[in-house]
Image 1 (tube, rainbow, N blue to C red):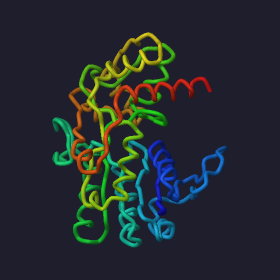
Image 2 (image 1 turned 90 degrees about the horizontal axis):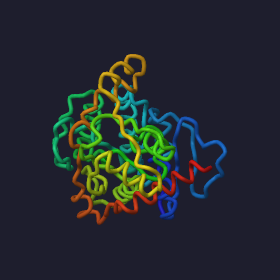
Image 3 (image 1 turned 90 degrees about the vertical axis):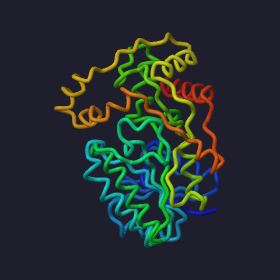
Image 4 (image 1 turned 60 degrees about the horizontal axis):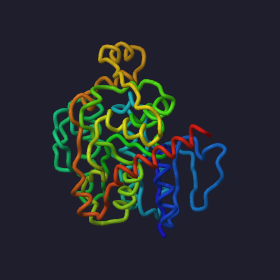
Length: 315
């Protein structure tokens, strides 16, 4: 049994907390608001309200912790302003306490035209959100190589599955209209091959790298099954749910730009539209081979995702 500190209680932070508890660990969950309202206390989990950019407060919470998992997610349109501060605090805490710094990463740092993305693919994004994510890893790796801390990162594509709420492209924005028989409105080309990471596979990788010395000093691509186009994914989900395959009408680029004038988050989506207008595919074989992890098969992903969403909609 060990103690782990998880920054953030969104879909990733919450799912990882549950997994750590299943593994017999204690977890301190740090968020601005503290414990979720209306939820019963879970043995082994302590919720603390704190500012994740305050290294001194975090350090007190992380003393004796085996890992510090940065699963925070600042407002999408403010990544370039907020991530350097939040990640800087997390690195400082890892230095002070000796906790392994585990960062929940994504594919933004690679940039457009990267081909099939692996851990070895250069981080060369020139878009602001991608550039800040790439710099976060460079700084953590530099401190690791200097012996100042131990760091690792797990990079996932768009995630889906039970618990994938919020703004996930394959979360509520897909499942709610699909189950209601409404038209789906994705961003970009629904027929481009796209990698989707099952949320449970992402958190399994995060828990593994937090506890496996072989993972430290490297970034890892979360175990991810073969790519599917948005259209193919929607079709499989509809068939499993027993509903008609929905119509798909992508949001035009001009509409995203127009909406982005008033809605900052939409403006930022438009700037990374390449993720859905060209193949966006990962190869997680290095993670699978080295860490002994395997992606959940698509049949199980589809079945478990539909079952969870049907239960949520019914409730």
